[in-house]
Figure 1 (cartoon, helix red, strand yellow):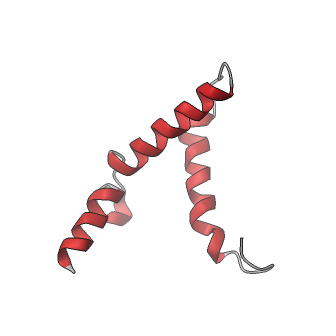
Figure 2: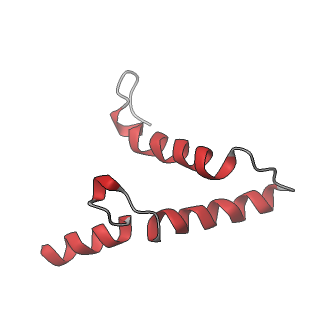
Amino acid sequence: MSRKGNCLDNAVAENFFGLLKSEMYHGYRFRDADELIDKIGEYIEYYNTKRIKAKLKGLTPIEYRNQALQAA
């Protein structure tokens, strides 16, 4: 958490949780907390390895990171 009045540090986390809620959580009823935890883990795996992003030139976050490491 950043100091009061400085939201830039939280923007990435808030964006991710907004996507998680809209793409995975809303409209789905979970039987218990364990099922929710499992689904969040699956979503994080999907987000990092399969979900392409226009901001990352049509790559997944892992593909983009690997491309940046190879260029360095």
